[in-house]
Every structure is written in C-alpha cells, then in structure tokens.
Image 1 (tube, one colour):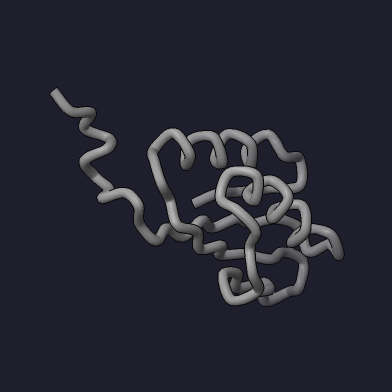
Image 2 (cartoon, helix red, strand yellow):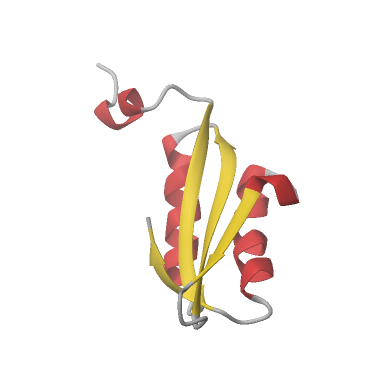
Length: 89
C-alpha cells in the first residue's frame, strides 16, 4: 500500500516554499542557508520577495524542485526552528 501523503504530489515537482519574517538585512540569506543543503544551490530567479505595507516584514517565496515528502518535511522542520522565521505556508 502506498503512502497517502506521497500521492498528493507527483515527485519530482516544482514546489513553492513561502517564508515570512522580520525585514532584516540577513533574512534572505538565513532562509537560503536552511533550504540549500536539501534542495541544492538557489538562484535569484527561484526567489521572489515582497515587503509588507509598513515595511516591517518580508515574505519570500522560494521555488525548489521537490524530490520527496521527507525532503519537504525536513526543510519545514528546520525553518520552523529558526527564530528569524515568523510564519510558513
């Protein structure tokens, strides 16, 4: 019997990771440093950035090629442990 969580995605697939945090000079690098060991080197064209209306927060959307549910779970867990990350989607 196959794992139901694996059936939601057809791996490998393009997958957006949305990360929200305070707008600080190093936030983008921190997020990339967490994701890159699991997804390979990220390029600028894989990352979009949007600053909140008041300029206090930033949202990053990082598009990776996801290879497994375990990979996504590991990235999610490590981002959640990061004190600079306020919220994940």
